[in-house]
Image (cartoon, rainbow, N blue to C red):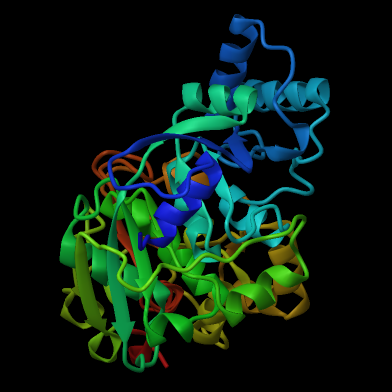
Length: 420
């Protein structure tokens, strides 16, 4: 029977020859991930159940990243729970702030996720790793407790959707624009509990960082996972990083998809998702002159070195608007160091921006850039729900790094070419 990538990975991890959509399977997981918000609940559940050991200390990863460096006493308590549990269990992959990064940038960088993995994490953007050809999906904290204990979990095999991207892309168009355009086309529930499979020559030409951006936002369309079949770009990225052997999966010819969409990226311009849904997408050129108070460049969506280079290419030799705050957040310490070596920090600082240590921070309205009532932000993050970045009467506009940087200069949402 012909199967999709998603079906093949689940079948192999469930010890089955084949699976079909909507079938319930028990599958062994390769990696289990928790952070400072979600893991403490799972750890409490384990202690309440009397569980003494996780199934495999080398397969459980804990990353304090959401409210770190510790924002307040409550967040400090959460992080303390992670540290004590990691020490008790002898977890080699616990990342303190000097080694940490935003989890979904850190794990690929450290080679902890490889093609063909089945990975679960108590964070909705765990789907990021689909860009490496891994079936990676978010779960709740009680499921996290079960996975940490048993090393397996139940899954309902998702139906698959195929997205084919073709054509050459225009200047200032990135993978962020591909996925925002896609979400704008199908809606925030258009791929609900489905595997989104991204393919086509326009995907093959994307660097790994922009593929990770696309898979990261599969959840914003309701997707269970956002998959890209491993190719030369993937294997080049993982070959010097991988901590374990990998297996590359491809969908079979004749595999069944519930829906297929073709997207001509040559017709795309940089876009912005207006409040208060990621599906509320418009080309930047069609957005009215909206003044802004803050720009955030970072997050698990767009905090990688390619993203920082894109922003710096716009900001070099310029000053940001005097009434705009520009906050730049490299997603990991390695990215931080690389950006510093390349002189990107000088560009950001000379422009009037500030640079943060790696943290999720403002993306979820945590800290390092919370919005006041009536304030507006352009952000390279992934969500713009009501109150997502602070006050319920604030507004978040999602964009790629080029648009965010240009908007910081202009003090309003603007196309990058207008400030160059």
